[in-house]
Length: 556
Image (tube, rainbow, N blue to C red):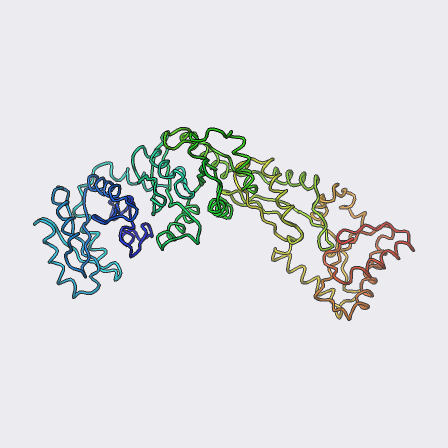
């Protein structure tokens, strides 16, 4: 199956009886569409006492098939199980091809004709090697020759099945919470095996279904349990497939059992959903069995364990009877539409500006954090980038505050939001300008004649983005009535032994700015390092002696 599809679809393991359900994949070869169906092994005694259910899935697949590939092992010869499968297939009129696998060398091809005894006179035989990648194209061409002639609707139906569905839903949860029962309700048939035995499902199965004229895909995943409790490689594959299904889905339905407490496995899955930033719904199943608990109590209990996911809605269903199943799909569509929305940059900046005005970011590292502007750069999930003076100045508490404001004020109330801080220095051109400034302010190269006040003055854009302090700087300042002196001494370029010379250069630049406007001075400090305190001490002394008005942004 995986060899022909060129994808990891079915779980592969040396243990017999790994596959239980019907695993399907749509193939498109030479303008023909056909569906591959992988079934469990015939005659294998299931370790979970599900042999009858597996056999039912095999029977359904054979009844639906237009062509049967009877796969045998070339290295072991004809076995008793091969003869049992042959007896079952002889009662079916469906065309068959005997595929002799594990013929890793041409020498083994000479032994393949012995398998003709398993078919009739019209059954063709093909020797292949999955491991050696032998005769794959020949087998596909043989399959195409035995398919029924194409009808007028095959191409149209194949394109419909091959196109991207309206929505992909990943159904995840721990063992025995009713995921497979929910899948069968959506498919309106016994599509997957349902059993009280934990760990019944082993493969991630894509089930396509229709609702209100729209096409959806529900991904049934294996039940998950704690890592230390994984009994074999098959269960480990199930955990890996469940995580991959979360990444593939548009919306994740996290199933919870209202009759059980929230476990470590539930928290592990919710953490995976949170890290992938996937829209999610907490689906509470088996609500018909709960008699002494209200929905409000259950919601409080869930959000007590998942406080970081309070934006996630909670749906209450009964999968066995189909109660609220359609409403759940409608809710998933609504959440998915939220994740696709985009907001204008103007609205986003107004929301961020109001949030900062309501609670300014606290001082960190002797610097005032500033948010310059905000923009949404992507959707699904909504991704917002905040341009700031230094991203390391914003802690996680303030980030959570901004996320809460954005979710409340923007149409993203039930979906995750990715929020990134980008420093102003991350702009390559800005970094080059800062490097040039630092070189000019180097101890050995600084000269009064090299100082250019026009280049060091704050621009109009800089004044416009000073709203972080509560009130925007007036237009008079932009017209030059207030002198802005931009000091960019960097710590790594100022050795400790050069403190005295640094203070001298600072005073020279300071005297130059006083000559431009003696009564007012605005000093913007970015990264003063150990030069900060003595420099501000000199500024204070000058202010006292000259009675000048001093305003400093940056470290106080």
